[in-house]
Amino acid sequence: MSFWSTQSGKSPFTAKNKNGIAFLISWLFALILWLLTSLNAERTMEVSYRLAFEHVPHQIRIKEPIQPITLSVKGQGLELFRFLRRSKRQTLKVDFESVRDGRWSPQLTELNRSLGFNEHIRLLTFEPEYISIDSKSLYFKKLPILVDNQMSYTEGYDSISPARLSHDSVILYAAQPIPQSVKYIYTEPLKQKRITKTVNTTLRLKTPNLADAKLAFNQIEYRLEVDQIIANEIEISIQQLGFPANTLLIPATLKVRYLVAARDYQDVQHTDFKASVTWSPSESQSFLVPEIRVLNSLVLDTEIFPKTIDYLQP
Image (cartoon, helix red, strand yellow):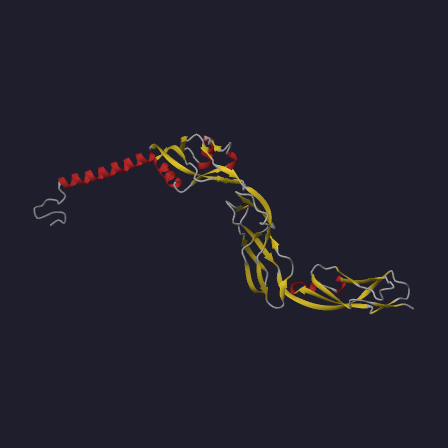
């Protein structure tokens, strides 16, 4: 008995079943052909864009909301579908310099360039012809920045140079005249304890409580060099300036105590210190005051002993 036959000797695939399968295949082919035709067909649709103005001067405040712009675009089905999906998540960016007399009048070339239209998606028309921009000028004042420093160091450590800020001042803008009492712009508190290494951080600026107040920028970079501080003591001779012959200094040398960062200790030498005394005796003064010059900027602080010098004349 054949596998494809029944007891009656007839195939299970009757003419009716064959006609049904052929119809189904034809229907699927027609559907695919329709989809391909639809995807390649050109259509015209409208899409609305919200506006976002760029490069707005800090002294200008734009009032919201801003009227959207409606575009009529034409394109192939698949490309148009992709464009519509993308446009729902985007805004149209406009350079504020193109605003004239309180309104923005878009141009076809400008819109084509901004939205990246090509041969598949074409801009036909847009409305309205211009969009009114409601804005006003703000008062402004340049103010120094003060760091709210709340730091402490581990014993034996300290800052080895003044703090460096990316900006030492900022312009404040407000819708009202800025009071004379507003003299500084403060940072958020910089709270660190038991510091043993250089501090690198970003600090936000505090905007004063004024109507429509805003700052030209909202944060600064802060750097403070920190290291272990080493104390050292050396003894150097004193140079005599304008002294009579055979005049003796008592003592003839000075002790210099100085502070230096641990990283710079090896770079400080005896020759970096110069001591001198200028002859200038008077009836009311029986001693001389020595001067110390430090030739190395790595030295943080100095102290000399003794503070005064006696002299002996033959």
